[in-house]
Length: 166
Ligand SMILES: [Zn+2]
Ligand SMILES: [Zn+2]
Ligand SMILES: [Zn+2]
Image (cartoon, rainbow, N blue to C red):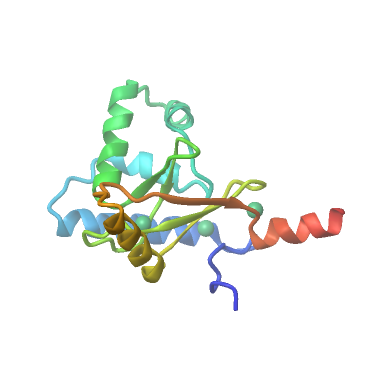
């Protein structure tokens, strides 16, 4: 069985993804007593423009299109806020950001499947894998501060296209 619908279907209603993510963000901020300012909201909405990670400069230019001209440090601060509150993740291999609707308590043990064709990144959370990584670190006397597992490849849709093309 493939991971149940890890990747969204191309035909899915992405407006609903955005609406759900924005609702979840509002709630998360309210429950953490954090300010969901207009800029933070706009940045998150741009991050949720698709399921593909987006770079800070693309975010900046999208904001400029919206009629704002924030300075880059302001955008980085908004992104830091989103990261700190578990509303987005940084995909290191892409130097880009992707939205998150998981409720991360203090665990940050996710794995990301990143499609090299369409660019979509999907977050999966495999507890056993996280445990194995912790054990690996322990055996090496290594203290993990950050766990980033990013797997590159083809999503089911792009894999299908690839098979047809060849
Ligand atoms: Zn979507
Ligand atoms: Zn997440
Ligand atoms: Zn793909």
